[in-house]
Image (cartoon, rainbow, N blue to C red; front, side, top):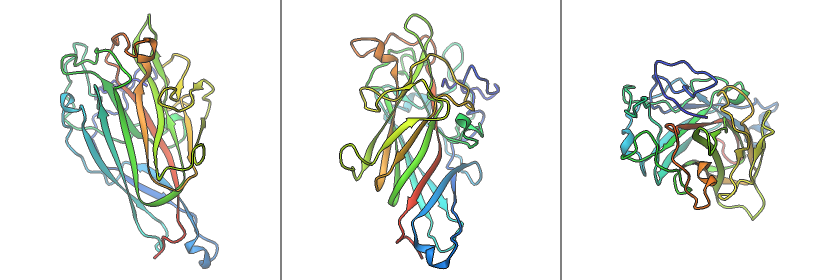
Length: 304
């Protein structure tokens, strides 16, 4: 969905305004685990819910719009176990921007970067992304250059963001939803954004064709794509979905045992041109998706 980051504007279903007057932060992941029925089960694989929470966050400065190309930062997430016999796990999340992709900024109608105190949040201001009844971790971007600060340079397949999740120990059965995958792009109409998502970089890599599955989520009957770089997951029907509304959800399950995986995020507007380069967007082309309800299974051996 489009990401119009205005601190003075409330979130509506027509324009994205979820990251309002907040701080670029380091959220704390709260883990919810079931209490075992017997003490002997303390070292069985533990299903852990990673909850993106606004408590305990630390603000970090925003580097600035025109310095975002190739920019990368790692955010530590602390997973806190309710069970005292389990050790704490820190999960690192990094964002890298390639080509003319960069972190989305607040933009005025004239293309100037609007004031927002130089900070940004990485947790959704919407507590119910994609109808999941849970907040989401924000992945935002736009495509543009210093010469085209409002993002009106043509969008290409080489402009994208890569988000890497790295776990300090092997985990399995990683489940999460990517929400708010939507579209506001027509070749002869408004050319803003077309969210395109690929899950890749599973490490260690499972055998070909195993260890991974993704299906349309709640109310998302218009989700298409096979999830490859050439045919990413995306919504076929044009329309800007409200952040809290289902219809743009992708439910992902990584059953393989891994220590890291990546999400590739692009503006699929480039696909309209045979050359792989789109016509220039007619607006700022800010776009955002959310990662919600992430769960992992920890190995039985990870006990104190």
